[in-house]
Image (cartoon, rainbow, N blue to C red; front, side):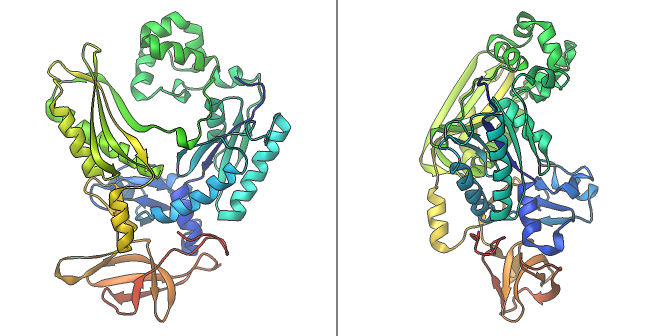
Length: 450
């Protein structure tokens, strides 16, 4: 681990929801929830105002509506978010050639590699300037963590939220980590956390007190040695540039082995959907679908299938993962399942056709996720269904966004990011000839639209 806090972790604050608030004056300071709006939709991001009511990402949308019935519920506009993300990542790459994006709104930066910082003072100045630059370029806020390792930089950015900066001074790491929950450490999810809790270990300091041998006994060699080192604040993981990303994957370990074949199939489908959401969050696609199965006896099997071209279609990934599962015997029980995608690219065959047709917005897929599609959809009977939150333009009233659509009517609020006061609301027939889909407007004058 280095001697200076020159690893930076940036996490944009409630990114999707904040972008929607910035582009819609009537939603500023209000509860906003972004995600799939169908019966099986899930929350992608909730504004801080919505989080007060208990709404959080990955929550079923139906539950979010019960907790915050008066919030604004919008479908995502990933092309818009991706354009803002490109601006932010450009600012990070101005600081260093070593930028490791984790998603559209989160990244590590090695400041030392770019000569941007070499000690505590210079690192803090970079962090302050970066936050100001992000606000000037995007009108949004980001939280910055600075530390001597990736693990601690991420912990620092969490402490900085929202809209702050935290620097962890070298030499103070052990004292900081000690009283924290074991869940703060990388690789400690719900299952591992519960396993440690049953052994009487709930804090990072209790991992250190238990000793390395005991942690290895509880978790096994591979996981135990690494986790004990993390508890001692030892983290030598390097910041890896984006081009070095080889795969995207997710996996779950189960406290009780799964024997029911139907449930195993359902878990694989769910993991496939999660994997695709992470893939899309990074703006990637892939050709090779990988299934990982750890059985009751700890034997681990990996199966893969390579497609004809790269994809980020959840249905394609689910089907491939399901085919791979059919070749695996799970009779004795399953303790871990994982789905991954490798052979990564920054485009898909489907994207190329969609772009040629001018259809690059987002709708909800059957599993509640977000997929590419038109801003307005033709329903049975010829009715046009306008998507909540998406941009439109009216021949008389100008630029606006859809508040809701149904029963042959669409309600639009006419306002732009530059407006100070909320815009006026008008309702039209869904087939009004003066109403048409529009491109998002930039959040800052002269900025890049979505």
